[in-house]
Structure formats: structure tokens, C-alpha cells
Amino acid sequence: MVVRMRHTRSATHQRRSHHALEAAVLSKCSHCGRETLPHAVCENCGHYKGRQVIDVLAKLDKKERKKKEKELEKVIQQYKKRLRPLFDKFREAKTLEELKKARDEKYAVYDEIRKKYKGEDWQKITWGLSVLARNLANEYESQRAIITGKRRWSF
Image (cartoon, rainbow, N blue to C red; front, side, top):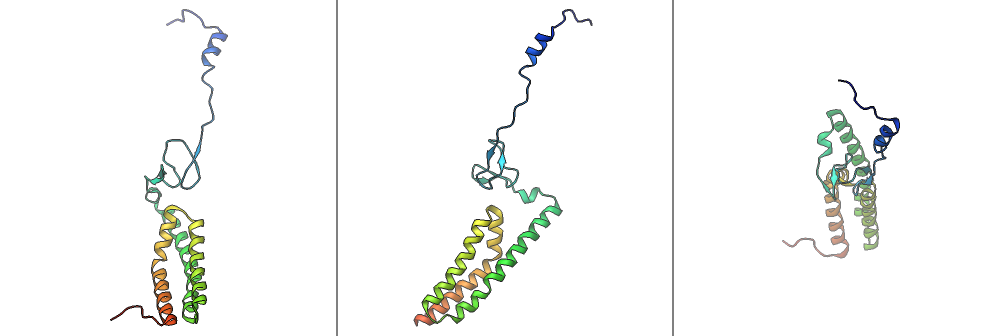
């Protein structure tokens, strides 16, 4: 085949003037704050329009998943170390003010966790601390009953 009519450079350039690449417009993920394409699931956390659509940990390969779980386990252990001394503070409290001060320390630790970690990480950390937190709550209630002279349960 032979080109029947040659295109001038000007015609070629005019045709290609719309072929330029544009920078992608990115929006921030409402959950983790990472930049993502609009109307697309966040690759970092798997959220779309405020709810989790994809389980990102399931998508990670085995090594990365284990690494992430180990990191979360270390975080859980650190917070357990910070919460365990509160048992002694609850037991040693002689007044309601001392007891409330110890309870406020517990809440401060939980607020710190809530601010620092979001989404699935926050859920896993709180689940890891749930038994300890329940025991702390029981200890608080029993010590409060001792201080106030009111029984916790009636038999």
C-alpha cells in the first residue's frame, strides 16, 4: 500500500495536541488519609465511602501478614504493660478520688490507642486487650463496692 496523501507536520501535530498526559487527580481516603484515585477503593486500608470493602490483610502475602500481625502483637504487649500496674492502683485505692484517678489513667491509655491507630488495627488491639480491660473493670467495681460499703452482687 502506498500513502496516497501525505499529512503535513502541522496537521499531524494538531491531531496529536490532545494526546498529552495529565496528572492524575487524587483524593484522600476518609479512613486512613492516604491519597487514592477518586471513586476507587483505597489500596492501603481497603475502605470505600466510609466502610471496609476489601480485607487488605487477606490480600497480603503470608510474610507481610505475619509481619503486620507481629507488629500489632508488640503494640498489644506494650499497652498491656502500661495497663497491668493499674490493678495495684485499683487495689490500693482507699478513697473514691484515688479510684477515679486510676480509672482516668485507664481511659487515657485507651484514648491514646484510639488516636494513634484506626480501622482494623484499632479493632485488633482492643480485642487483644479486651480480657485485661474486662478484668480491670471488675477490679474497679469490686474496689468501689469495698470503699462505698455497697455490695456488688446480692445473693
